[in-house]
Length: 343
Ligand code: FA5
Image 1 (cartoon, helix red, strand yellow):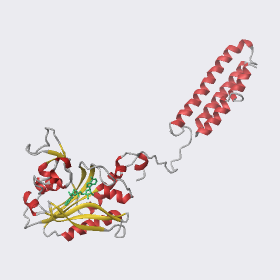
Image 2 (cartoon, protein in one colour; image 1 turned 60 degrees about the horizontal axis):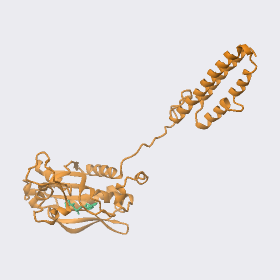
Image 3 (cartoon, protein in one colour; image 1 turned 120 degrees about the vertical axis):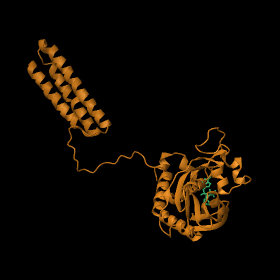
Image 4 (cartoon, protein in one colour; image 1 turned 45 degrees about the horizontal axis):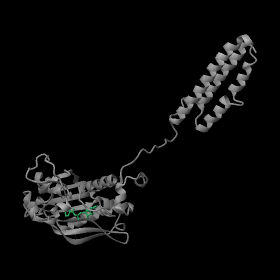
């Protein structure tokens, strides 16, 4: 065989192989092309190699050199195609149809508690409540004293709170008050009223901490939504209406949720109630609420003869659990992606 003919057949083969590998759009197609060109028994390259034996002896070195170059070239075309498909990128040579529907790539989503918090903010925002933030490291004045919880009250017990030993203090706090991880979001009521003249209509959502033993409905760190409304002539009927409206909006209608108000006691509200919701054939305690105690109003400089108000604090985890039928609060914090990805 003339050298020129052999080299021409190699060039043709190289071009065909390059085109075929570049247009392979999936792993199966690529494998078929690989067998077609690089197959050990009857691939095109193998057949061309057989032609090498027919080339004149004096031309063999040039023919062999070119054969090896083309073999390397075809193998690297295969490697390139393999990498392109593994990377998931679009084929360079395939036409790209912009009218085809896109393929969603799921990279993750919000934790169910974050979703619940956002939905709650949204609903309460529509009811006219502005969301505000408060510090998670609190002094015992805002966590207890200003909320009418005296020094002797068992709620202040070191065994029931995470007191901090550190010397550093939150900005602006008096050095005489011990610090702790807040045990309730009711602290934010005080911080807002200290700075804002009535009327007030706020919610605050965030983490609170208690050394509770973890069980199906308790966790040492959990979230609360606090609500506070202060104005002239606010009554218990307003509190019940707002909580009912909130629950109906969140759970989807009167037939989806029953709310029960149980007489109770909190030092900072009078009268006080416990808020329960029906769940799994019984009742689950969701939070506490009541009319803001006149002592609390006085402590922040409000006149209880002029304004009245209500406050509530609900457990975000329990509301999220009821919504999604999660029977154990611990599942929310085990970070099992198989569990979390359901919501
Ligand atoms: C309070 O924390 C009051 N600050 C609520 C309040 C606000 C009353 C305003 C009056 C006016 P309580 O300790 O009951 O109340 O907690 C409220 C809710 O937080 C509970 O009903 C429950 O839903 C949730 N909760 C309490 N402890 C835990 C815990 N360890 N794990 C998960 N959720 C909890």
